[in-house]
Image (cartoon, rainbow, N blue to C red):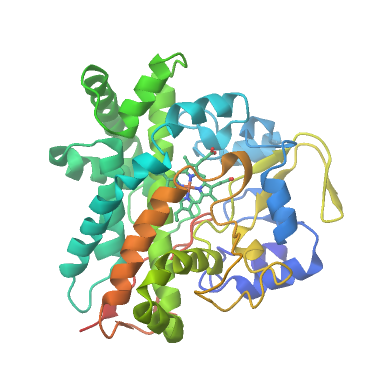
Length: 405
Ligand code: HEM
């Protein structure tokens, strides 16, 4: 059964790669049904994946999906355009171009470079506070990225505990592919209301007294001509939280996991800390935190890998599979921190290329450099016993307890 071969299926989450290798070997996209009832054609080869990600005949707008598919995706902000679902990942040009212009002013290399010292010192401080036995996901990666996102959004220190509580309730229940995630689904509507009211007030304050943050930047850009409705603003903030938190925590968790499983790579990074930028790229390639890029829908019949997808069909790009394609990367299953020519697809490709890629890289580099400095780092539990996130999009260990010292 095809759906039994899928990542996200119990038992495959820790190592989906043999199943991906089988799918990739056949070369053809395959129609699969996911655990959450949504179905789509899965693309696993690097060349096909890269072409599909940038193909204008493949829409991101779920209103182009078949009726039964839309019914199954109702209420999920990445699969349904109502509610909080009008954002970059559910729109096509020219609507997408307009929304991206409004938010992209903040994500420039120059502006983000200014965040680097703060991110590095936050990582250093958090690492200094860790003791042997700590969980590198819950005690290190998650609080680091929460703080970074609060800085980016301009959430004042006094409000952060409430803000983080609401966003955890909203984000953790936004992907119904996650059985047993902490967070009560009934808490979501209440948290969403609280978050909406808070963000509305925050935006109002920033309209009067702009700060150096993404909400102020969006308001300023919108007032320059592109009007942004209240719902669009909230949807965009929601997207930044959903797209920016678990993914980056996943990078640190998966990166550490790979370094622990490949001690020679960890040793190399310790001996040559200047390799950190290359190392993070290779860790991103080796284990893509976003395992399946979000949905696309064929606007007309589209040929991929010798198969013609009929119009209206949903498609998923398996980034994690494409990044291990032996036709593109030599020795793809082994992390080589000195790898050159590493055009992985972990941040996507084309018009929807990750807006936060540079921010994620800054956090990933700062965090993994600290991890590599922990002396005698070792897993505190057998690696086979780790619990994994079973999300249909973001992959990573839920906890990663380690010993050191
Ligand atoms: C889009 C991965 C971190 C914001 C994407 C896409 C991928 C991705 C694969 C494209 C999805 C598609 O084409 O269907 C990642 C990974 C991250 C990360 C692996 C961490 C390691 C972040 C951060 C932010 C962010 C930190 C912001 C704070 C976004 C946004 C989009 C996006 C807004 C939509 C862009 C568009 O549609 O124009 N990301 N992301 N991401 N990401 Fe990230």
